[in-house]
Amino acid sequence: MAAVPIPTRQLFIGGEWKHPVLNKRIPVINPATEEIVGDIPAATAEDVEVAVEAAHSAFNRNRGKDWAFASGAFRAKYLRAIAAKVVEKKEVLAKLESIDNGKPYDEAAWDMDDVAGCFEYYADLAEGLDSKQGTPVALPMDTFKSHVLREPIGVVALITPWNYPMLMATWKVAPALAAGCTAILKPSELSSLTCLELAAICQEVGLPSGVLNILTGLGPDAGAPLAAHPNVDKVAFTGSTATGSRIMTGAAKLVKPVSMELGGKSPIVVFEDVDLDKAAEWTAFGCFWTNGQICSATSRLIVHESIAAAFLDRLVKWVKNIKISDPMEEGCRLGPVVSGGQYEKILKFISTAKSEGATILTGGARPKHLNKGFFIEPTIITDVTTSMQIWREEVFGPVLCVKTFSSEEEAIDLANDTQ
Ligand SMILES: NC(=O)c1ccc[n+]([C@@H]2O[C@H](COP(=O)([O-])OP(=O)(O)OC[C@H]3O[C@@H](n4cnc5c(N)ncnc54)[C@H](O)[C@@H]3O)[C@@H](O)[C@H]2O)c1
Ligand SMILES: NCCCC=O
Image 1 (tube, rainbow, N blue to C red):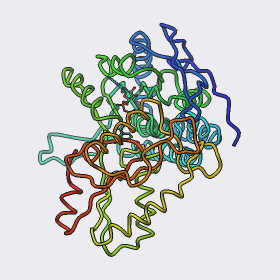
Image 2: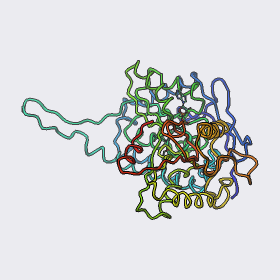
Image 3: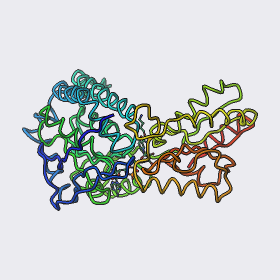
Image 4: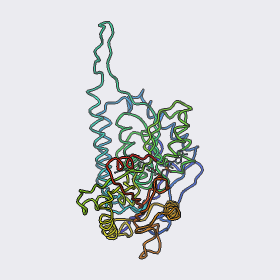
């Protein structure tokens, strides 16, 4: 599949492209080739200041009548226009995401459908707001009147991860805009390309200036000052539990509301009466989809002891059939993990599991047919105990750890074992 040129973009603030105040940039590395293919602007606290001011004036412009307190139907038109542009540019966006993040092109293309669907969904909700405004609330005393007013909270900071770059951003941008908030989006420095294209789309559809500002940059340099800014009224964050906890601690000092979507360690339980082939397919899908980099990855397999050997045999066969290649290659089902840092981290998880006494049933290393790129074979680890790191911590890569059970109670206990 032909690659696409990587656009050179700036920060998107107040409806315009702006060079970062300190003029720094971050290289974009294609994880399949380890080559630098472009760069993105690196925002710092100085740019955060300008972006928050832009979002603030957009919120208050014309006493809010231009956006925040305009009708939901007015705002919905922009959300639908963005959705239409995403559909129009789907192929380019999916290719950029695939090059930036390493996910198979087909999966990136599904994600773009989800992005468009999400903007449409919140457009519906924005339209629905209008008829709900002013709904009376019955009170026991006639002398008092009460009605419901739904109002945007103000300027919101949206901080997102790299595993579904444009989709995770959309899950925050679309509802914020539908509600009438103005926003500053800070995507992950590891895959920001499509979020910068979202900025271009906002410009194309004529989204009022300052309603959505997009700052790319490092977490500590751009994310931290954004989350802590006193004129940011709410922070919505998706990412690791450690970063979420840091943001929440800072927000607590300002009594600032936050919403957090953090990491996980999800189980898949396979009972003795399953169809072995179907269960093997879904187990592989649950853990190895998006190269295993999903918050909901079913990274703990809990299988009934009476079928464990036969089931693992099928699963290993299934996993060995997964096509591992450059994510832009036709039929790719598993690409590289997102970065060199993530690659090293996952290999360390695997070596710690070995040193703690677990067995690598399959995988555990870079596939032999690939000599560059941050590729890791789909890995299945057995002889795991609940005290091992591989069982307790989120790996966020193509690694499945296995435990057997003999009773339903035991399966439930293992499934509920918290991180
Ligand atoms: N629950 C969900 O819906 C969901 C969805 C996707 C990913 N995730 C989780 O995200 C994690 C993977 O993403 P990640 O590695 O990008 O997470 P991360 O916490 O490293 O980074 C997430 C975002 O926070 C920013 N950031 C980093 N340090 C910061 C700081 N001090 N202050 C403010 N912002 C800061 C990063 O630049 C990035 O934009 C996994 O744990 C995964 O489970 C959860
Ligand atoms: N399908 C999107 C899942 C997002 C979590 O990582």
